[in-house]
Length: 427
Image 1: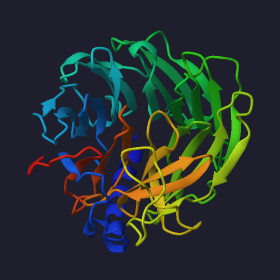
Image 2 (image 1 turned 30 degrees about the vertical axis):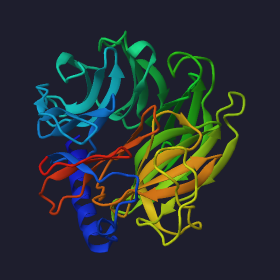
Image 3 (image 1 turned 180 degrees about the vertical axis):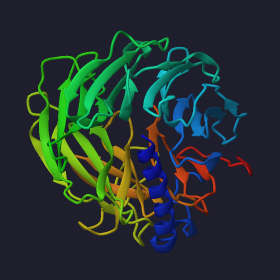
Image 4 (image 1 turned 135 degrees about the horizontal axis):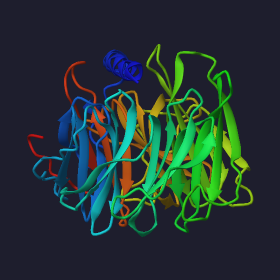
């Protein structure tokens, strides 16, 4: 576990250096309206995006910094409430996730190391104002690597994770509306890692993961559809969508995410070359029809987009309050994309945030392919995981950690939205 953490921070330092030397300077361009100017909600040593929950027309925000997790509310006009330390007794928490719970409250999930140095999965139940109602609760019985989480029925939270074995096992767990794990974790698949979850408006679950061969030089992408209350229930078999080679030992899988349009699922697989710091994102598409999920609509190789707006007029309809988007560039043009972050839900056109040379861009996918894209604007210099959310009025919210000016400086945790925000002077 300690080796992985050291590798993580070495890589982040390398990324900062590469972006400072080689990437474009999107912060010198005007914001792409109607995206707001970004608000700094906090500063932290981590380069993970803050966890964001939609709270009316405002937001609840949780982030990790040092040994603690913190909570704050942000109002629709950008005003930031007081910072509340959650006092969860952590050591070095990371990867916080907020999911809705009853009475406008929240399920909070995160990873942290135990006294033996193993990464475990924890949960807590928060009130709407951030008051700790239950937790911390240890969810995983052993060490955990990747985690996927999603809202379930009746205010529950659904969690799937891979353990830390050489050939990991995938487990699933339901956390009830009060923040209590229900029963023992369920074994889903062996030789599986990097779980991803999505759910249609009609209640159909898509659960995806990567399986590996014995040598570990290739990964098979699989997806399983289920119309049951839990994604691991039902009789459907997992369907193979495609295989990737990882024969180059410096290339590793960084993130796997699922997104949905009305008829298709999109599995975004982000990889990175540790030797160069350069990312690559592929997308595998599949049908959401239960009897044809294995029919691959197409593989989008090495997605690439510009970091700044072209000298053309955007005219692609997005269906969101983001206005029109630019048509996608020709295949292979632009900057390789990292940290794919599809919005949770099912849409006519699926919005997905990406890091592009330190900048943040949003792509729109429909009918099995990319139909448009937008740069986000001033101050978007993403250095790690992104977050993207949409509300019932079709406004989008983006969150990320801005690259610090120096390798040992704090990252500014940023929030940008299609609602008009008035940023304050200090975090």
